[in-house]
Length: 423
Ligand code: AMP
Ligand code: MG
Image 1 (cartoon, helix red, strand yellow):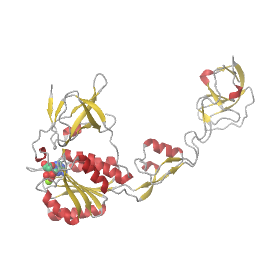
Image 2: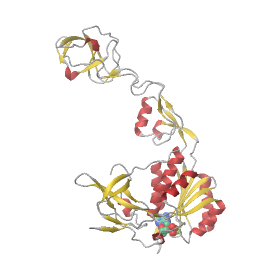
Image 3: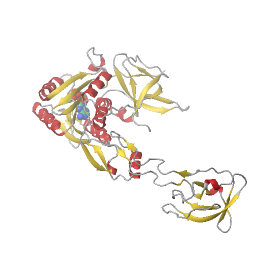
Image 4: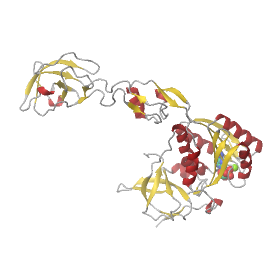
């Protein structure tokens, strides 16, 4: 049986810290500190995707606005259907979608009708054209299988005029935009998006386009943060790389907190660097330096910086993404809409054994896939060191191994948070 060692990177994060917070304690503390943004604005409907409604949407009209045919066929008065045998009718008029017919059907008459066309006066039922025998001289014949009211969409059956369609606080989806368009809304009242300022810290960081000297690395965190923030649809301000320098950092913290609702930084919160940042942040805000019993992502800084919320993420690229996904993303969703999102979590069978000791929460980058029998299975996406971003790239999910988990055997059912619902 193959076994994958997860805790393979020796680091200070390997030992369980007796004073550390659990993942759920950290989440609860963040949630308790947040207040939703209540500023509002109006946006055109095309810009409303993913935005949060600031007011209930009340339908000004019935949808459909008129009772209409659900089929191409013939409109009848249902009382006029034969109860046995067959019956012939005269086709007295034709009505296409977008037209109306004023012809009132007398007994023995019907109207040729197309899908979506309003039901002519005196009719309440439609027979689909495939079930009609067309005769000469504008006459047709039907049999006795038809029911009064069939194949008709009633006015207001989807949405009645005056009904509340969406409530304040709803985050608008593609289908919602369609519903709102069907009601004729051109503009919507929504809450302002959170403004997020972010920067990287570290003397070893170089920006793309610069040449790397010995010991230097390109700043990748600003790109993963940019992309994750972009996916969330917040307003973002990229403040670049800030040197490990007291004045430069203080200046960056001040600037960021003045322009944004939330400030996100990476690096500078690990042991050794923390004291330094602590001193500056202590003078500018009210910040907690947390050790969280999780891997990756053990050090996390959270609190208030001026009027902004502050998240100081670890420096390691995978730890940045994990802590963002587990803490910052739900917090931003909460600020934007007043609701802490519930992640989709599925169960899958482990394709390999996963070694783990109880004590801390481990987030394992994984690949979810169906086996030949159509069952969902999962295994690690590669080496799990917190600097190894390629295994994050390959992953389509995170395997959730909670504090109590003492390892997973091949075939065990584990909990998995997919990155998307398709892959
Ligand atoms: P730190 O938390 O600042 O001690 O950083 C931990 C590790 O992450 C170090 O190896 C850093 O070089 C690396 N790191 C920090 N920030 C970044 C960044 N923006 N992009 C890529 N790697 C980084
Ligand atoms: Mg650093």
